[in-house]
Length: 637
Image 1 (cartoon, rainbow, N blue to C red):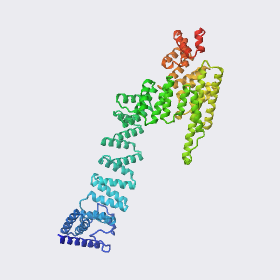
Image 2 (image 1 turned 120 degrees about the vertical axis):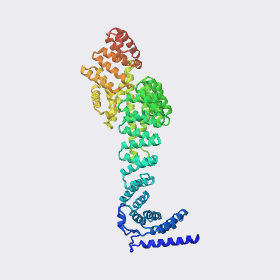
Image 3 (image 1 turned 180 degrees about the vertical axis):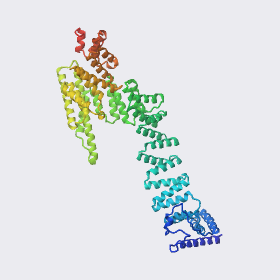
Image 4 (image 1 turned 90 degrees about the horizontal axis):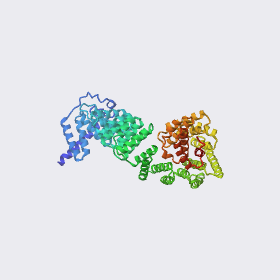
């Protein structure tokens, strides 16, 4: 065997030498391909040589079998030599030509491999996908993109697009030439066959997003979800449907989710938020169904439910859910702070001063001091003015002198200064508002002496100075103008106040102003002053607009009171009383204005017993109220 093996090696070496000589440019032999034959390089694959090649099939067959045998033993160089010998013996054999070209390519001689592959491609024989693939890869290396694309497609067609390796290689080529449209097509074929491999899926997703093909993105996500059940893809699909304003399809998916997990939560929140943009009540109804009927319950959904219940004035349930959410969302301080803020507001609406402060302090703690303005305001609401002013004095001292740390780049320093200025403005605004709270308390106090009344007047003037300074720095600050307009009205500067209200009503809806509150305050002021029938009509119209916009907000009952007073001013006493009956009396037990209004309306309707009850409640709140005293003295009819 050793002698035979030596003979084979010598024979193979001899064949290589003959091959090298026969392919030399000077001979231009038609039997072997040459780099100097450009026609072969440019010929279309459908064209074939008409040359009849000499054949020595016995030698070709024997050399091929030996080459395969040696290849299996790991003797690659000798196998290559024998495969070349087989091709020399049968130069018209397409299969052998591509085998030689493939081996030359594996040696790293791509240029020579391309010449052999081009020649082999012009030979008759069975067209195999891997032969086209070899041509495609060699053209890629040569930098001939059009030819590479052509042979990739021929190879894929031949393999009926089932050759995953070739599909993937073609996708890499398309990345190089930046043909996104074709790349999307190829990934669309490849992805289902690799079960939506994450890296390829993400690339296809990115491409479709860059091309703004949102509908195709939805189809991709749906197909991937159906293939592997990845619910994160379902959530992404809903997100894109919502961006496309395909709410019906998104909601249909949301209706199917029944598990209390993060994906279900994101789907429900996305759909709920989109519904709320058009109809908040519908969003609330949708959330309640998912929470109570479908039992999809997470801390975030509990938090949203609590806020919706607060808006709907279902306060007992709101308190339960907001507390539960605050306790469970410890790792998400923004939600915790918002829940405690709402709880503080509910406590204030119920005149529960102790819990109002407790929850406001909790909100500030959860936000790591980010709720200081709200906390100071709460102290002001409950009458703890010394504590409120002390907190604001210390904060203003810090923020008025604040400068960026040394070493911070200029861009960051500018952004930090802007944030500091915003904080400084918030604290000054809070200071001004607390002045008005204190003034209002004094003004409502029937026992207030002249000194206290003077202090109240001065407090409103100091608030005015704060707000004027804020407007000097930013004349576009309409939120500050709202407080100024209200304060001016309380100071008796009606023309200035009403002119500012008119300016505010001309602002766009996008300005972020609380238009129902503005309309109600201004409208009620016009009604209460009763300067003319025109003013009363204007005021009543504004209050009705406020009611139309308010929905079921906590402020609705105050707006109903304003409307009833407007109807009273117009002499429509029965209608006024019907409106007052829409107000929940238990929410008004400490509201002197409510008892004053309903008492006056009841007197106008001859309801003496009911009026007696109302005026007694009013006298408990204000023992010196002139209307109540007049009623009981018999001078009010």
